[in-house]
Image (cartoon, rainbow, N blue to C red; front, side, top):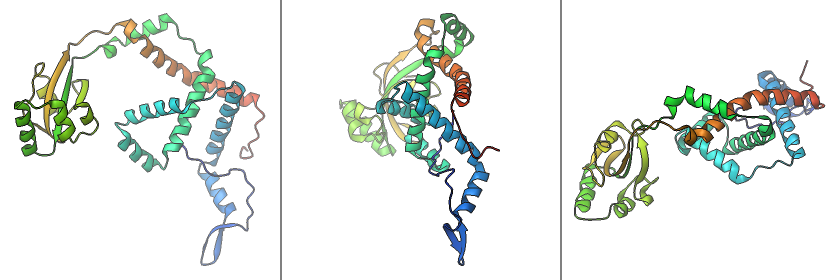
Length: 280
């Protein structure tokens, strides 16, 4: 759909020439000058964006479509994960000049579009099966291991933690006390299942060679020193169609949404009484 846009400008307002937004040595820069510049630099696209937003809003009101805050937050979490975490995502927002509020507004709009179009999008069992057969390798489950870790900054601290573990101390409690990886320390350092390529090489090399219940010596990576506790291993396995049906349905729905949305929006623009003073 659209990118994240923080629109706070009253396009189409007849500003008076004498009103100034700035001045240089007493010479005024009028709102008309600013308006003209903004129009030249993308105003037409922004007005079209606002028209589209208004159409979606009015159609949603007609069909009593509302989106809960929980649904928006769930989508927001997915977006954050796609960027590798909230910190990286916020940095990207700052670079683009957008805000979290802009993003959530767009996500809410996208969810409204899905609800408006979901009854028009049909996905058959045959379509899903064909997609699965054509993409079978991508659905296969690679070998995975389940492990926990305690991450500390230096080797001396790592050796201290290892000595306590060798002496019978509880791994979970030591993770809470010592681990600098706050994303999982309260869960005993649990990393869940992961496949090769998801962790740094030094960490994976040790973990995939371990056995159930084994605790490693300190492992140095770019993040510090890890003490790893191995929990379980899953062998690689071919994917089963029944297990992937929901995932495939979502993928096909997203693909069809793009085409359906374009046609739907054009239909609505022809149906609605739209006046756009920027159009020649």
